[in-house]
Length: 63
Figure: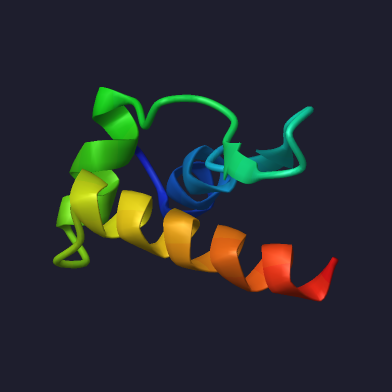
């Protein structure tokens, strides 16, 4: 990554969508580049997956 704005744009691509079963899930797998950026903050794919599942449970309760 050459600069901070590029890294932020790359992380913004990690998003969740509501699927047909009304459950929110990550739209795409986390890329290698995103994993490298996350690791610089002490995070990994498992953390992203855990947080996405937690957010999905919260949103399911709101619907």
